[in-house]
Amino acid sequence: MNEIMNYDKAVEIIKTAILQSQYDAARSVNEKQLMLYYGIGKYISLNSRKGFWGKGAIDVISEKLSRELPGLRGFTARNLRYMRTFYEEWKILDFENAGDTPGIDSTNELEFMNSKLVITPVLSIWNLQVPKLQGFPIEAFLHIGFTHHRLILGKTKELSERLFYIERCAGEHYTVEDLSASIARDDYHHQGSLPNNFLQTLPAAEQAFRAINTFKDEYLLDYINVEELCIRDKQDVDERVVENAIIHNVKNFILTFGKDFAFVRNQYHLDAFGEDQYIDLLFFNRELNCLVAVELKTGKFKTSYLGQLQGYLSVLDGFERKPHENPSIGLILCKDMNKSFVDYVIQDYAKPMGVATYKTSKDMSDELRKALPDVEALRRLLDDQKESWQNGR
Image (tube, rainbow, N blue to C red; front, side, top):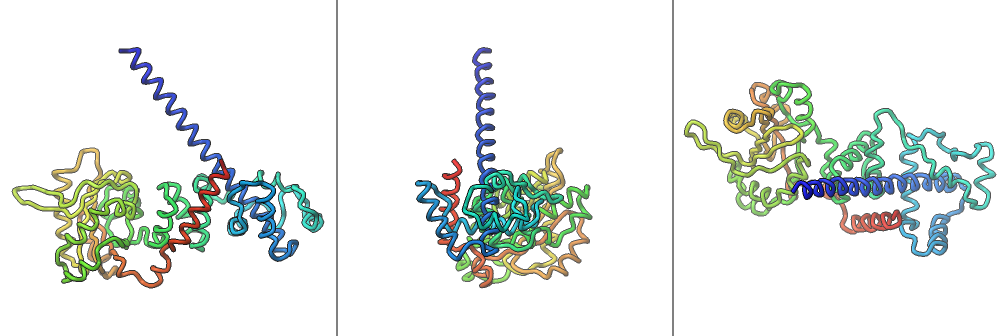
């Protein structure tokens, strides 16, 4: 028996080593691919932007590459232009002087650029010095794929916003579809801005700030059956319609909330002192190490909702919370609210709570609808991503 157990241990050790090696290999391929694309993008930028190449040069180069290297994928003219954009958008963080090719004397730059395409800059392509801005998330930057980078650069402009989505992609292992949805929801601008009383009610400031950054002030629940809601729409009637839609799409709901949320159940029964109460949705958040009670309201925010939720949290903490867990947190999800008013009245409550709004597909503005990823564009992105990975292998 001991011999079998030793074999099992050996298998586990070897399996772990194999999986780690596969992960490291995949990561190394991705890093090298990004470095290559950045370097190629720089080379194309310096030649095409300064007029050393004629119009249509990128198309000609792409065509010649496909003839010279049959089966080469991922180097279409469109992708070569994306590589140029990749360099041009991130060159502000490059150590080298923008406009100089690393390893080439700038005084001889014109002569070099006008020469035939001798592969002199190959060393510079592979010797990329990655961005080293203070606080720059280089691990996350190199972790995500080129297709993700393309989408972020195409849909966002501010550096802080781009870094937010880079870290979100790496930390939560976003697919291209996940990233598209996150950008369409405008997660960056909705993060950490919901009305709450966390700083006053949670025992540690660090825990409070984590809670603030965990929740958004608005959520897009575009899978809710808006037609059914409209038929039954009387203020505060039957929140079960919303609840059932969320239950049937709980994977999407958790993706909207964040990867650290685990669903416990809906209509969670609380029985204290002979009083039966039911929480609409109960989650556990691993990062915050606490239960999260979510109450759904189809109408505008009312102060009475806070009193109801505070009662639920008191019972949760008194009867359900484990000794190692942090105080439970409550979230009210309603259709509309006056943020200034909510921020003012919520401070007088003793339990940690926040209030957020939600939108269904019917509520989305034309601007938001346009921000949602186009199916054909998304398909092209995925095709390019597949080509890039095949080429990397």
